[in-house]
Length: 374
Image (cartoon, rainbow, N blue to C red):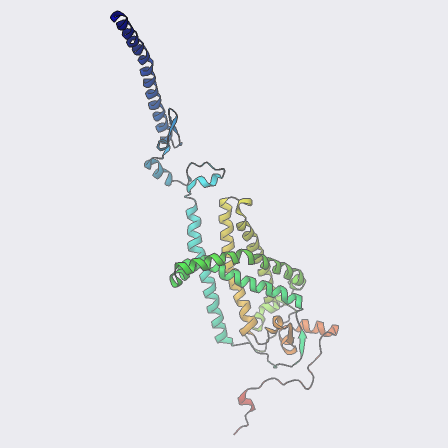
């Protein structure tokens, strides 16, 4: 009985020894494979290629990490620093794009200073002009006779452009200089809420501006074709700097034609680049977005300065001018002084009186002239 038991134990021991040998060999093989994979990953990482290391059925996530030395070497070039992603959008892998530093510097530096410079210089020039010339008065005074200058449709197109542009200018100006000028004054919470709301206004009101501009172009392009007599108006600066000078002008003088084409061309540039920025994924790549953004910013700065001049002339700068877009009717004497050719054209068609009736209010006189001499 003991002999049988001894033989069974010996058989089991021999089987255990024979099975342990393959297992040891498998463990050695796995260790060698892991070492080889790690060496390969290190070689690929040094070459700048991300790699994953498989340890049996496991993945070592740190094996594909970029070494600090390789990262700093890449930062010294204009090549982007790219990470690893698992989504279709390849742009999401860009960690750092050194080439963007030039755009960022222009956007936050040059564009900001150009915008501030245009606006400040324009305001200073208008203040100086007002101190020199004062408000341009109707030399013969109000006649009391009205002449229709703009129809309701024309005024609708004008005010649609005007109101929308003012909203676009204010919300856009906040995006350019708000962080450096407005943020310190009102704080982060108020500035964040204002900027967020302004962005929504900017994106939607832009469509109203484009509609108004297109309508104005159709209504007025025929009257804004440059003509030879416009050169005379420009030579005399429209009589703005000298009293009693009234160069020839049709419905739109040379100055108004300059504003018209500035709005059409500048507004078209703003509209095109604005649409490109609204739908970036369907229109262009990142480098073109940056170009569109800069063109949009510089065009807006120039347009804002031009419109400030236009607003000044149409309000406090010239007596009787606001009525043209206010009620659509202007005084006959104002029209004769600033648009004589247009008045003659309407009189020839019988759509404007030839002169003021005798009962019209006489031109205002100064107090010194009306006081009898002592």
